[in-house]
Image 1 (cartoon, helix red, strand yellow):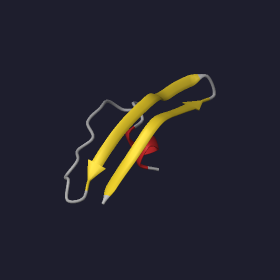
Image 2: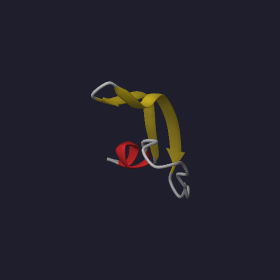
Image 3: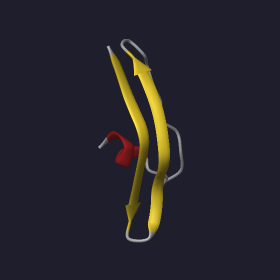
Length: 46
């Protein structure tokens, strides 16, 4: 199984938190998200 995210962007008001994100995950992958507060980690997962 594969999960592909292509060209994902998200903005709140006029602040861009995700800009053209491209990711591909294979079944069984273990992924960690690192970043400072407000960098879009939770937005990516939602």
